[in-house]
Image (tube, rainbow, N blue to C red):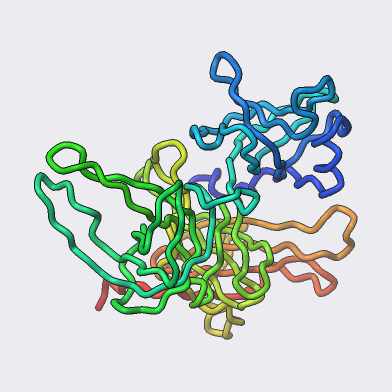
Length: 360
């Protein structure tokens, strides 16, 4: 493992407060920079320039932000309100930019549209359809809905779950992003169907992903995400570990990868583990070398540094928390350092995910 893997992550850009977001959405807040969500109406200017108008549309006091996110025709309908998340910078009283932008759809919309994040309930029906020329509906789990939904002017009584198959006849309460897909058009007639991407089984306690961040199914709290970056395939999704403190559980899922623009980056969860206090044997299973790198005490193999959280500069005797991953055993460890007690890489939590033992 090279030295770069042990470097602490760069400082994260701060999140703008609600008061600051209100200010930049109007004619104030010049010079403010940070992450946040602004609501408004999208317009397309000549040269493929897209702007989010947040105040005073069509007047001399109009305030707008140039965004770099892909949009659909529905996003650009006149009077269609939506939200945009990204790195906001207010350059003048009336103009700003939103970089790394994501267009969000929520219940500001008068009807359900593709891209909205919703919670739906129903019963799972697993299928393996066939059709002429391979123009079949996708194989996998479908959700027969308790109530039909109106999506983009059409009525759907079921939708396809873009997730690994759920048990047949499972009563599922799912949260995810609505999609409008199509099949056929060559040897069979073109057909549209509804789908749900980035699926969370909220009935089983899985966190919700709203297009920006994860929320606890217990109390809606924003959750920390640890990324386990792929070392072999650059275009494959990375594994993520979502730490749900209120539920005392960690959830293992996947995120990102090489995708078409506008695709949902979250691919769902596959396993979970209790966030538990370590035993003496578990504490003894990890050692730190002279350079401060964590290794497996039995094999000497280095552990993968995932993230490090340091206390604010004005906090005296604060604790630093560092997370490591053991890829051979699918275990995430948390260590604390500092504090009044003067801890030095003391193991504070263990998350053991199910894994296949190659020795069995």
